[in-house]
Structure formats: C-alpha cells, structure tokens
Length: 88
Image (cartoon, rainbow, N blue to C red; front, side, top):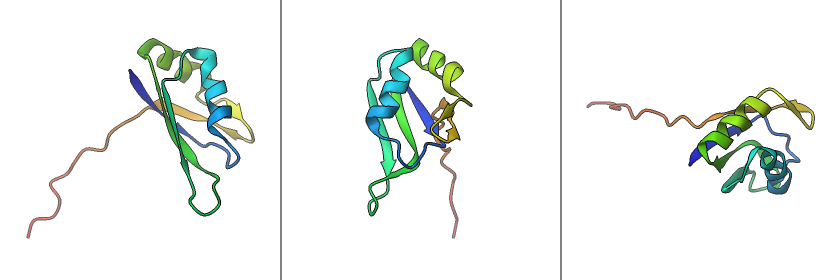
C-alpha cells in the first residue's frame, strides 16, 4: 500500500470527484482531503492510498494534468525527517 500526496486541488474538489479521477488507475483504498473548518471547502491538498503499481500509474497519468482550473501535483508522500530540535 502506497500513500500519495495530491496537491494543487481546486477549492471545489470533493472526495467523490477526486476518487473518480484516481479510480481510473486502480482501487482507491482511502482518501483524505484537507478541508477548511469554516468554509468546508478543500484547502488544496489531500492524501490517497492505493496499491504500489496502481499508485505509480496514477502518478504518471495525473501529475501535471489539468483538474478543474489547476494542474495537479501527484507524488509519493514524503515524511518529514525529525530533527534534533533546539538544545538548551
């Protein structure tokens, strides 16, 4: 199972519309769009889980493609490295 980052989504994007887009490349196991608490609209990014080969196909098929008025950014999720922080 691979987790994808999806960025540059339109504010009117919904889980159903994004799932339908990614379903062309395989089974979407989970989807989580980051929503604004006040307006209820998409903040422009989210995360999708798919099988490895399906995730790679979705990246090659959707990265840079137009969805709504914007071009999507689709890539594997990259976890931030934990730093040592400040030392006092």
